[in-house]
Length: 486
Image (cartoon, rainbow, N blue to C red; front, side, top):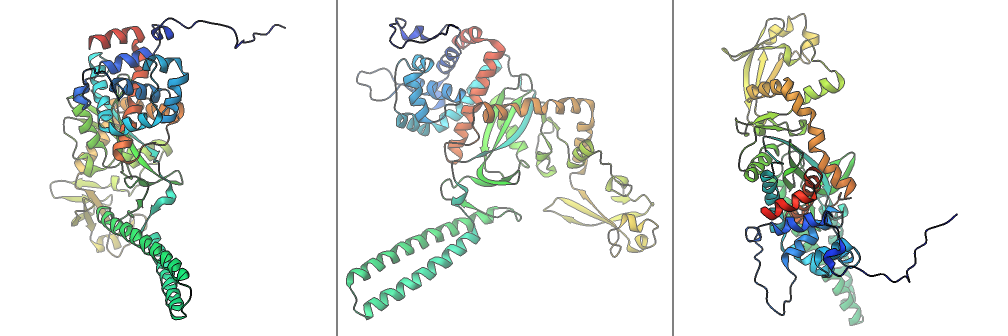
């Protein structure tokens, strides 16, 4: 059997110029043209005229390197440096330049805000190419790990334990110093103990500073949340998901229905998706320069208090928990569930299945609900008391949201054929980018720290996803001509 065997000593000739290293239809040319089409002045990266004796790399080439690297899962500055030496497409893109990893990392860190703005410009390019219409958006979120260990996260309980041990250690050291001084022991021993004492006092000051930060954060947290502080990345949060706890961020995406391209992304410190829908709609609208007609998301975003903030012109398709349970498990409301009670809007009362009335008894402004209760005598004499009342001492109680009309409207929209058709597309459109990032690009953890850094990385991942989709949809040659025009 004959085998093909390579010969490293065989003499070959590379093309006459670096430009011939890649073909005319190579995707790297799209990334090159895309960055050249960006408005760097609006990005906040001014391009100065060429001068002899330059000591910095051309910003456009650095952006090309970072964007192209992220598109192929090369996010580490060391890997990008290595690619500039060994990968022909990177050599072509950089024109033979080989910036050091420290230079790449420093440029990315210094231009985080500008990188965030590149996504907006890419979206507007897609609008000009008729790849995004912005009429229907899908909002979804996913958890990404932070570049910080969970062991570096502090809460009040950990601080109390640490301070107790430190104080005990300080007391022992003070006693030791007094004993050595009293017994006139070697001064070197006293100096060594005093050095340990200073270390413990400095550690105590650091822990006390963490306690002060935790106290401030606890005031900003809701009642059911416990404040935490990570010393490596203070802006990250402790996230519980799938029976696992990690330090990370919640990334929100707004994806267009037409071709699944990303319109907006944001790295947040929100523990849940509830409360994120309207902010993402507003920020996506700023990029699109108009509000979407329809927005769709899963039940994690269902919060009537927050959904009430969405503009009336926007149709929201989002199921509540009961609708999801009904679809998933076929759970129907019982004969004495709230749905079986009829609301009398004229008298602001509820009528139970036994034709008894429930009267308003109070409002919970924090939970945005109004309570209705039947007379105790009516419940005590009712034949359905055991099935209807969990406690007959006060009578049957029903809570009605202050946004009940909105709730009924959302239920009707979701149950409609149009709402079901839109919701069926949600997984296909909204979850695809996250799958591409985490599986194809191995980007389950951020490399940069803080909201500014993670937002820059999320934007780079979004840009890379959009360009990959654009190449698939339009083709290399057409994109090259389109970018040259724009």
